[in-house]
Image 1 (tube, rainbow, N blue to C red):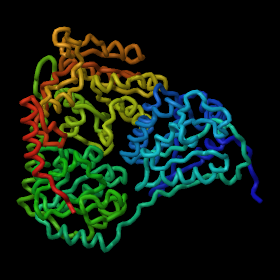
Image 2: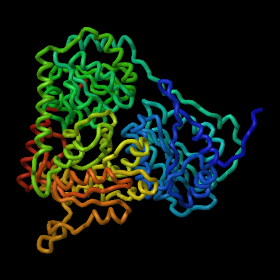
Image 3: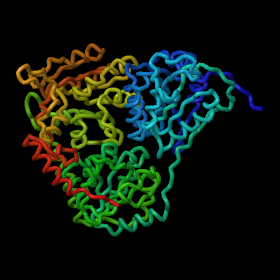
Image 4: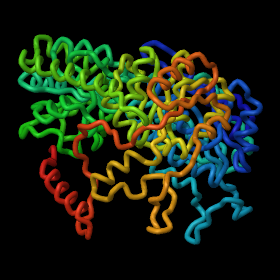
Length: 620
């Protein structure tokens, strides 16, 4: 009979988690970096007490439950999914505040472990404070909201359930193909309940993150298709970077001449100046990327999930006989677009495909056009970087100044608004981890918390968080956490007085930017079309403890970048930009338009929608 160890459920959870390790390519490391948490009556005496008595499992304080999940997501992304954080909350609003974070993690295929407190399992005391009651069942709480946005969900109603639940949670968290948010709902009384757990449950556990090989016959078939193609193109998604396949991709395309277009998650798969790199893919793509994809006869998707931004709402690939080949560790993503599915690790699949295509190269004329597209776009980027728009400056110039000043190893972080689109097109990537965009969920408020997660994953890098006023106002309080923990960020706070991205989209749909500017209500019109609101975001950032540098033009902004680098504390560089000065050249993207309207611009937009929809295809 095995020996046992008497612990509370919460204590057992923390002891188990700190003994979980991962290994890939012979490199071993602890999987969890610690736990973020905000305590309330649903977890203070359980998980809170366990963390209190286990200082070796580091506890981090934060200011917002959603934000702490964002920190964890960014950390996991920077670690190529080989490291993660735990996040714990009380029951009620603390728990449901994490639902958005859970969705962000799962959509982006990034691991995070959530431990929300729950109501009493005994049900003797009910309803407790913050309990959701149902007249149809007692077996429900707000934590059931996590089910559709979690890759694994369980409720620990008895202590011994932990013994089988935690290994299943770890299986999902460490799986390249299945990872995402894992939620273990923990009733507050069960957290504090003691049980005699088997001692071996707390032994060191090493999870091997395997490089699953694709089927050889499928790869051979893929090679045969590619060898006959005249205009192939590669779509590089996040899976290229997560599998550490950037060197293999560079070797493959340098030899074959096959062009590469990059998704948001995949940007950085190649350096910007590689001749085969056409830059951003899809709706926010470069002209060369859009043209080459439109004419491609074979599309090789590597580690991409084909969002509508990548496929231009299923209108990007216009060649009638176009064929898709997908290399993806996830079978679910691999079969998209009716593709020949080579399910396996991106790095290994690329290496094997390279061997099978040992003598294949694209036509010289095709290679020359690809190189020309690369060079032409770089000239356009330089033109936008050097616009000299005046005051207020253009957003493109701000991006250019930050990109030019930053070092090769530095990281830019962003998530929502008009910035991601411009960054996707304009940022010159020089490092596979230098471009960190959360665009699977495009979650406003991710930026500053995400920047903190990036910095925690690799403190040696300078982290530049680019955030608009809309996202800043939704979630800026983790500036305090960065200062508390000594993780310095440089936050570039761009004020364009509202939601510029959706304002532009609204204009394109005929609704004149309605509801997207931060203005007073006009007594005459009754609408929000008065003067701009007198909000001082720079002073707000100062009040949170950041060093703040106010700038007015591009020259003072460039000087501020140099001054910020000398600081050892989180620094906010504030600048206003002209929301009407946009980077041109975006492709169509399907957004519904009112089928009937009394407004002429809406009617015109609807006609444009119907015209563009004719380009859409099913890829079967």
